[in-house]
Structure formats: structure tokens, C-alpha cells
Length: 281
Length: 326
Image: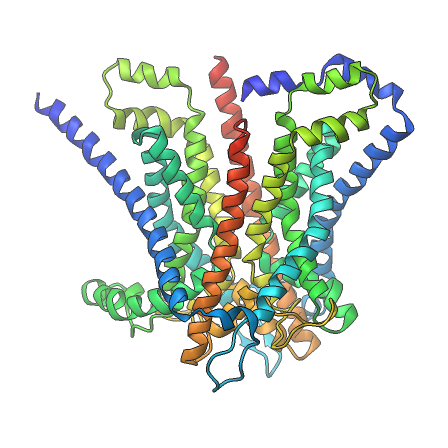
């Protein structure tokens, strides 16, 4: 009988420990979010969104240029990453059951595993070196390359969920295959596709490493796309490792804004997805 | 999963339609092929650019680069060993913490928590992966570094100081801190993927163990874990791949000193961090080319680690498929 109780006890203790693991993990998350919210909220104000960074020694100022810069970089990233990722995903889902499809899936995996800093070096060698200066385009290109693998994967997954019978129904009506894909399959999966792209964007929005020596940074408003451009993640990095108290406060405010951008994009994407209950990414 | 595969297998009708492709079909198909090939191009291109742009340093240092300890930008004498060492050590520390914790979370979510709570906690765990690396760095600099300096390291050196790993002055910044932050960052990968792997264990196997009188913990130990071993290892390797390439958070807390020290309290340096810190300062072309070569080494290692991870997860899925049919 004692052996029986010992086994019960081991069972109980083991699962208690797993429960503590889960509690601890969730605790870390809430601690991080709470800490950023607390420190960010106490240093944020309207100027933060509208003004330029002040030089060292002067307090106040904001990161208006970095917020706009991040949005501009995300736009450029979508221009590079979405067409390749989306059409690549369409290929995999609709035509990809062959050796070439396998090769593309493999390349997607490789691309997904490339460290972000290496993508930065790549963008530096192909865009910054020939142009001889840092530019928004180089940063956008680096982020775009980072977007590709997830865009491919999510597009393929969401298109595959559309039943084969839907495609056959279109074909039976005499539609050519490209019309079936473009006007029946893709619109049906539209919500999921959008979710995938939004989650992808929210992931690259916080990337810093690929921007350090591509988009670099800029203490003024960047004119056009060929100048170095400021972005929230790079600003957080430079301000956090600086020795100035006031810059640290600005870094917390920037972290709060960046987290809100990332979380709200992600949350919005999930709400979109929740309305068509068929797949969970 | 098996069901969707059956429903979506290309039917004979569609296969025959290949022969009646119209112009529109050809244009559409080939434009998707074009964009899909760009993915392969990108993967190959990255490797190619790294190789070409590091040729200067490859020629000068050869393979010795990998195990030389000097890092002297003034004399232009470079070796990558301190960075390789730092990357491996910080990632190992991260795995030591993240593997038990992540598996604990996965087991709790899979075996114990009611579905709704499991989904909520699963979502929160994934949220941990959505926090940008630089924000982890920020938390690291202002919360974890002071804590490690004032509490953890004095505590460790007091009670475990006889082990050389825990000797030395408490700096706060260093290998240990970097490892701790990395652990939090890779935990979601292990937890989420292992949970998915657990779900592929056939219910019938678990039920037979239960019918023999095993407790839930024993079922986990003798059925679930052995069955999903390969997949769990895969998730660990995937997390390792993330840890090796992680840049910002590590750069901000590891101390950035290219030396190999036994003590975990000492500052170190990683491959990703040295690129991030010194790339814009590299004045000579040899210096720059050396940093690109560090990137090349990092690229090679992550491809290897991710390849192993994919293979293991794939193998686990295949054995799950066979098990379900048997």
C-alpha cells in the first residue's frame, strides 16, 4: 500500500512542478509587460510623438522621426517581402507537390533560420556597399527578406485549408485554373492570408539587428527613401546603452510605443482570424 | 491532420487539366514560379555574398581563424575563438534553464490544464516570443543586470564559489546574465513545439498504459516522452538555433570583451554581438571582411543546427503517422 501512495505522491509533486513552471513563465511575461507599461507611461507625453530628439544635455524632445521611420521601413519591407512570400506560398499550395516545391520549402526553412544580424550583413553588402551610404531602402530590404519565410508558410497553410472541392466546382464551370485560384480560392482565404501578413509585420517591426548598418539612424526627419532613417528599435538600443538619465526615460517610452505597435498588430490579426474558426496558426 | 491531407490530395481531374492550360494559366503559373524561385535565390545569395565579401580574411587567416584567440583591430590580427566560445557558452546556459522550464510548461498545458486555460496560457507563452529582442535587452540592462550583480552573483560565489565557474567579482554584465535572458527568449519555442509534438502521441497507447494502472505521471514517463523524444530534441535544437543567432539582447548584457574566461561572471562576447558592435566602426577592408567571415561562420552553424532540428521534427511526425495507422 505504501508503494501505491508513493506513486501517487510522485505524480502529484511532478505535476505541481509543471504547474509552477507555467506560473513562472506567465509571471515573467506579466512582469515584463507591467514594467514597460509603468516606466514607459511615466516618461511618455505628446511631444514624444511629434518632436525630434533633443541633443545631449537638453531634456525633453521626442522620437517623431523614429515612429514615422519605423512605419516607412515596414512599408518598404512589405513591398519586398509580401509579393515574394505571397506568390511563393500560392505556388507551394497550388502547384507545389513536386521536387521543386520541396526545394522551395527547404529554402524557406533555411531563410527562416538565418540570424537577423546576418540578414543585416547581407543587405549591407548588396545595397549599402554599392550605394556607398546607409539608406532607408537598405533597411527595408533587410526587413523584407526577413518577412519572406513566414509569409510563404502562412499563405500556403491558409490556402491549403480551402477544400479541394471548391476548386473543382470552379473548374467544372469551365473557369481556367488561374481564375479559380485568383477569384475563388484567394478571396475565400483572404482573412487568413491577411492575418498571416499582419503577424509577419508585427514580428519584423521590432527587429533591430538588420537595421544597425543598413538604415542606420538619423536625428532629423529623413527626406525621401535614400537617406539613413531612424527607427524605434535602433533608437531604443542607442538610448539604452547611453549614459544619460533622460535618454533612458526616452528609451522606455519608445519601448512602450514599440510594444503597443507589435501587440496591437498581433492582436488585430488574431481577432481577424478568430472570425473564421477553421485554422489556428 | 490526416483528414485534410485526404481531402486536399490532387484528384485525377486536376492532374489531367495540366494538358489544357490556357495562356492565362501559363502566365499565372510562371509568375508564381518566378517569385517562388526568388526564395531559393535569396537563400543562396546570402551565402554567396558572405563568402565573396569575406574572401580577404579567408585568404589571410585561412582555417586558423576559427581557433585563434587574438582580436586586435589596431594590428589587424584576428581570430574568432572568443566569439565562438561566447556564443556556445551563453547558448548552453540558456538551454540549461529553458529546456526544463519549457518542457514543464508543455507538460502542464498538455496533460493537466483544462483546454480553455491551456489555450490562454499557450497564447501568453507565445506572446513572450513576440516581444522584440531589443526590449529584452532594455529589461536586461535595467532590471536583470543590477539584480545579478547585487543578488545572484554574490549568492552564487558565497555558496558555490569553490567551483571555478562561479569565481570572480560580480560585474552584472557577463555570460551568466546573457544566458538567463536567452533562456527567457527561447523558452516559448520549446514549450509551444513540444506541446504540439505531445499532441501527436496516439491516445490508444496512453490508454493502454492507464489500463495497466499507471498514474498520469507514469504514462507521461513511459509512453508520451519516449514516443515524442525525437520531436522534443528537434524543438530544443530549433531553440538552440535561435539562441546562437540572437543579437540585440545579448549585445546589451554580455559585456562585449573578446576574452575566454572560465568564470561565468566574466564579460564575454558572441559572434552576433561583435558584428552588431563593430561593423560600423570597421575602418579597413580587412577588418570588415573579418566581420563578414564571422557572419559566414554563424550562418553555417545555424543552417546546420536548424537542419538537424527539422530532421528530428520530421522524423517524429512520420513515426506519429505510422503509430496512428498501426
